[in-house]
Structure formats: structure tokens, C-alpha cells
Length: 119
Image (tube, rainbow, N blue to C red; front, side, top):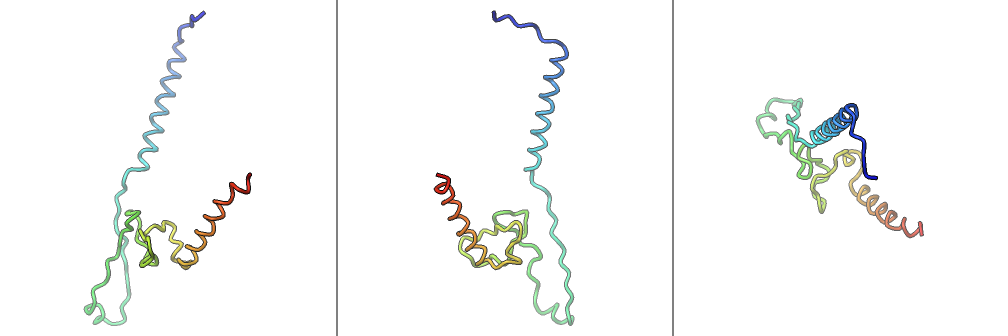
């Protein structure tokens, strides 16, 4: 008839605990998106003669990726159309980029046909 029993002291503590755990988990997951401090990697090199060291200045040790500034720019992507430096797993270091592009097109087309096969 619309009449409810009053909440007990135990259920109030339980509700408070659930709210506290929910807020704590939200804050913990939000901290994952906070920017991290970054220190550039140190690069060491061995020169055959000391004159080569004075002749040409070295390229910068770290170049940030435009799409993911907390990662290093993958040099194998330079010159490709649409290059924004997105290669977080550095596949371009050990697989030719032309092969990766063809595979991406092939798999994308197969995924577009998958719903037709489902019908």
C-alpha cells in the first residue's frame, strides 16, 4: 500500500560504502588520462674518428609524434599520404608500410562484407 519500512543503520552504511567505492573507482580511472611527465631518451653513439663529431650536428634525439605526443615519431612513416605519426606498436620498424596499408584495406573490406554473410 505504498508504505515502506525505514532503512536500517546497516543498509545506510552499505549505501555509503558503495558510493565511496564508486567514486574512488571513477577517480582512479580518470587519473589514467592525466598527462604524464616525459623525459627524452638518451642516445649514445660511437664515432670512428673525432673529426666527424665536429663536422655535422646530430639530429634531435627525440621527435614527438603529432598524433601521440607522448610517443616517438616512427621514422618509417615519413612521406606517406595521411601520415600523422600513428604507429603506437611500431609495426613499421619490422614490416614494410606498403604491406601494412594493403593489409588494412583488405581487412577493412572483409569486415564490411561480414554483415552480408550474416544475413
